[in-house]
Length: 392
Image 1 (cartoon, rainbow, N blue to C red):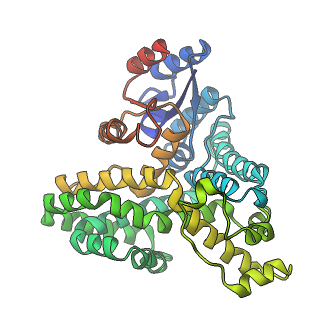
Image 2 (image 1 turned 120 degrees about the horizontal axis):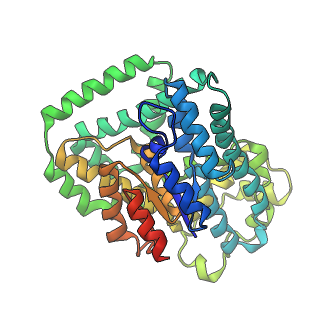
Image 3 (image 1 turned 180 degrees about the vertical axis):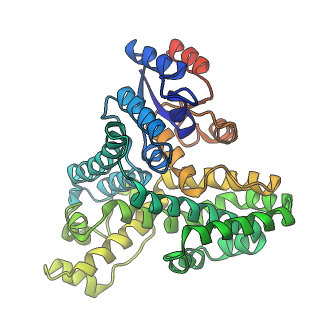
C-alpha cells in the first residue's frame, strides 16, 4: 500500500471549483483507498493553507473531504519533528547509556499531529470557525519566508559570499530580521515583498550566481546544516520540561568522550567545559546547563544527519533555478521544507503545481538514491497515481 501525501494544490481539488461537491479526484482517491492500494495522509501544510482561506463554505467542504480521506487520524508531524527523530536515533547509537526516551518523542510528535488534525476537524465541522487570529500569524510566517527568499535573490552575490564564508554570521542575522518585522503589519511586509519583486525584475537573470551556487552547493549545505537544523529541533522540543525527559544527561556526560566506535569516528571531538561536566556529574546542573549540553550534543550529531542535508540540498536547487529564471520559487522556504519532509515520510507526493513537481522530479532523479529515497515518487495526476498504485 502506498502512503500518499497531498500538497495543497491537490487537496484544494478534492472539491469541484465553484461548488462544494466532491470532485473526480476525491472519488478516485477514495476508490483507490477502498481497494487498499493507497492511504491518504494530510500535513500541517494543508491545515495552515486552509486556515487562511476566506471562502468558508469551500474551506469547510475541502476540510471535510480531507477528514474523510484521512479518516481523521493520518496527519504528518511538522518537519521539525522529522529532524528531532533522526537526531535522537543518532544520539541513541552514539551513547546507548543515555537511554533516549523515544516514547517522549512520540508524545511530542502526537501532540503536534493532534494540533493540526484538530484544526482541520474544526474547520470541517464548523463553517464559521474563526481562524482569523491564528491566520494572521500563519500569513505572517509565510510572507516572511517569501521575503527572506526574495531578499536573497535580489542581493544574491553578497549573500552567497557570506553564506559560503561565514554561515554562523548568516544565521545570526535571522533574529535581527525577525526583530525588525515582529510588529510590522502584514500590509507593510507585503509592500516589502512587492519592492523586492520589482528589484528582482531589474536585476534579471543571474546565471553566474546560479553556477557559483551549484559549484558550492555541497559546501553551503555542509556549512549551513547546523544553523538550519538546531533551531528547528529546538522548536520541536519546546520547553525545558520536555528537554529534561528526552535522555539521561548525566550518563551522556560520563560517556561524552567515548561514543560508540561505529559513529564516534565520524563526529567532531568537542570537549565539554569542565565546570559544565562537573555540575552534571554532581547532580547540580541548572536549566541553562541542560540547554547548553543539548546544543553541544546536537552540534556533534546534526552533521551526521541526512534530513537537514536533503532539505537544504532541495532548497539550494530551488534557488539555483530562481537565479537562472529571475522568478521566485513557488511558496517560500518554509513550505518547500515541509514538502520534502512529507515526501520523506510517504511514498508519493501528489501535486498539481507544475513548478514544484519539476523541481522535485529533478531532485529525486539526481539525488533520491544517494539519500536513500529510490522509491519515492512525485505525480501530477490521478491517472498517474492509478498506474503507479496498479504496479505495486
